[in-house]
Length: 127
Image (cartoon, rainbow, N blue to C red; front, top):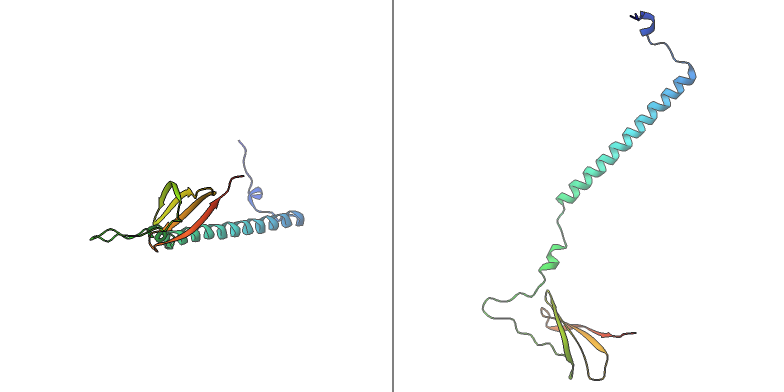
């Protein structure tokens, strides 16, 4: 078997070129560890931020018309005279009337139940 002499186990000083390489590697390792620590803190900060902030967009979904319990809500949508309705769609508190006037282009009229008025009158043109 091979025997290890005590002289081989002692650390011998490195030559100057190898010592410079070792120092550069230690600096590189410290910089890399610092960057990784900063990125880890950024990820943890983002997670904490997402978990603790309140969602401000959630109340926008509850903007539908509130119907009183004792009576239904009454509203009148004043569409133009002669307007022919071909399709109707409801989204929250807004009603879309799609149709046309005699001899005119197609139109989309949006009526808001909450405010009780027409909020958009869109002319639909086809090319």
